[in-house]
Image 1: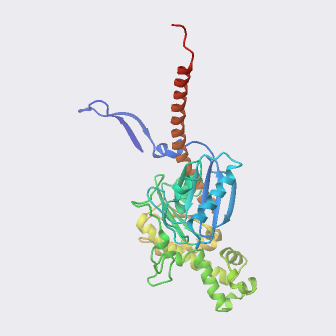
Image 2 (image 1 turned 90 degrees about the vertical axis):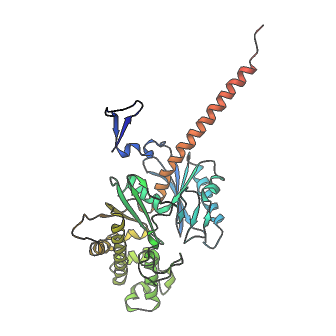
Image 3 (image 1 turned 30 degrees about the horizontal axis):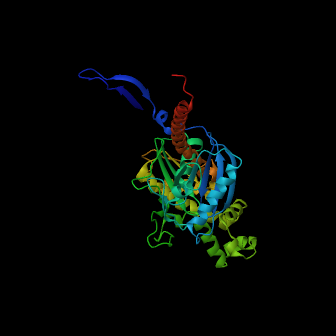
Length: 382
């Protein structure tokens, strides 16, 4: 709660006059953002999803395509983004574009400093996309946009201290406190996936070894299944038969599907991923002490096959367990569209600034036109 006081006159020994009190949420800028449709784009390691989203978080239309090969230039991905936006603009009145990028975004939310699963290094994504589209553009980390969506419309509603963990190709993360995304001094806060949990462990695309996402992510899940299948392990016979011996066809969704059908190996793999997830969550709880963890991303579709073991491991490893309040662990409600919805909702903030700037330009133009018309008007007789 914040208090507004009138300091226009000397106070002296008198108490300040309280004009009004406002809750934190009343002052949050999203409440005054224009209620206009915007496009949200979620760029992952395997797919690019774009959609038109209204001010209540409803998806009016969405399109999806595969992420261009990461060995290609960043311009290929930028071309894909522009094509998707232009396609949606043919059918919708788009006022702004928000982009959730799987990488480190600078504090100005312009450059993607580093994307482990894409060929982006210090890429001025916002300026390049804005230069090709006639609308304002906002860029943020994809986990930040997903966390924002869950806080606004999903599992994190009502939470003032929320940590989002996204399990996809890797692990993304975001921190929200009192309705604000905490980005850190340089814009790269929340990169939980690259915490080292096993010194000297599996090599990560970031260059280090033993990163958390090498043990609890979609890539980790598929790697373990393929290794067992390649070794012709007896426990892998079910999945080997399912892919007819083509081990490279094993995917995360397939493992989840087989686990639901009772495949023992797939169930155990998801339990392992969940236990590593719980260990990392316990570490984050010790450092950040949030009231809620929201688990999203494609791997979270495994639901209790994953979240159940994560909760158990969290309780076993939580510092001060039994003597402190326990954070809630919830599965994200918005599914794989969360990053897209959050990016679109955040874009409404830049749409507001764009509309204000346009309004000022229009007002100046109208004043100029009135002045010009007055000068062109015939003068009466002297």
